[in-house]
Length: 533
RNA sequence: GGGUCCGUAGCUCAGUCAGGCUAGAGCACCGGACUUUUAAUCCGGGGGUCGCGGGUUCAAUUCCCGUCGGACCCGCCA
Image (cartoon, rainbow, N blue to C red; front, side):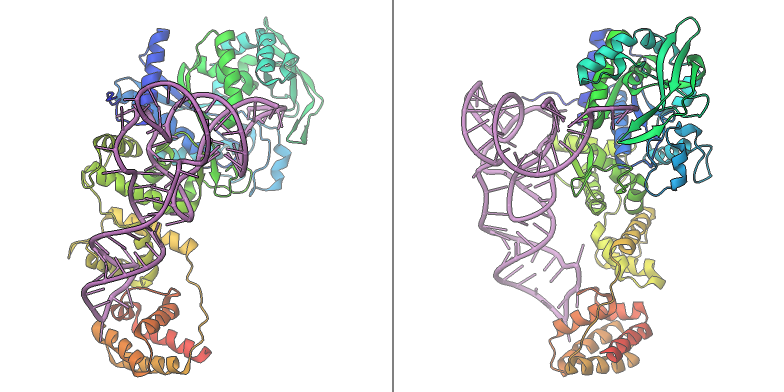
């Protein structure tokens, strides 16, 4: 039962081992083992797109860990047509439905095309996570003719391709239509064309721009009949065949995929093997990310949870933790989970540095996981771990004018910082996350408070005491006295004050806080309540 | 119609590269300690037929088959 631990003991190491074993059996060259991910370019990249990258990259890292040369290919699908205008973008874009996203102008005006803009959003988040990749743009790949041999083979064997599609998913379309979308030379659309004949001698595909129904909606064609030169990037393979082509042309040995394209992968595996005579890459299928309501998180549904949103509240490593900690199974996801992942990352770091003891097997795995989260560049020394909710609490309570000082002082008194020790970069980062968090989700609410006569008197008394006192302890005492003198339970009185001052039933020790907040501000707040009541 | 995932403590979930002794964590809850307490803190406690039924095994929450419930994906395009 005590099997050797593979690599760093994670799922990815095991996957890498399987890839190697398979490649060995196939007797293929292993100088460089490429993994691949698809970069969507037709909508805002959501968090799942990053998952694809993270997992494929983890396999690349695992392969390297086992002593092999490996790289991740990021293949940008910028020749895909626009099928739907994403929520949040101008309806004007509808006129570009069916156009390759790389030939649609950038609606934000900052990049050369719509597709570039979208794919760069994802690449930016990959960079933030430290994921390295070799970038391929479909547009360029086709223009340079990198897939030319495969396209020819597929078109020459279109009949067989059609049969495979029919056998696997029962779709008959490709028994008559070629698995190739020419770009219409007249109207510029790509999804509207129907390719019906391939002329091998001239590398031309004949087509008619007929239109296509997508999700119950017709994208109209212009009726143009023409021919397209497959050597010039004037079209692309449909997905039933394109994976296969690029696997072979780019020599891909591993690709993870979401279950939504499982059928497509199945078909492409067969095309790859049976038509292109190339053993398809090893695969791993993962589930989609669902939001808490059980809905698939997708670009068009409007519930866009982008990596950028995550980075507002949590670190890139915590996002990688989410992606990597578990491979199988549906993950439900919500912004409110971010603090938990931030804390879990701290836990992993504690295990990594031996501050927390767990079983050997467990420790190996968790340390490995941390290394993957840091893309094999784990921190050299432990950082200071302040629980997310504490930090959120502190920044919420902290007076704006002296936030850092207040937080520093509190952290010192709670023992997270030594006396005289100041905030370091990582703590500053945590403060930023917590600030965004409280700003966006825990707006201090204006609570309406009705006061009894005793409470009014107590507050009035407190106000006059506050005017005179400037010592934290004396103010603290004044509060207790104001309560007692008016027959109130101190605990209840404190609760009321917290409600008035910060909209929460509890908070930091009031004496010092009143001073930190500015005594006059506190007095003003109390007077407001008195006058309203 | 085809397929996948989930179902473990009141809640959220670990336990999924490797099946093994009394199944864990966080939160919540209860009790105690300390305190003019205040994300309090410290100590202790209850609580689980690991959805259900079979099978493989010396041993299954873990593997296999079936079944119920929940969700998702595909079935047009990609």
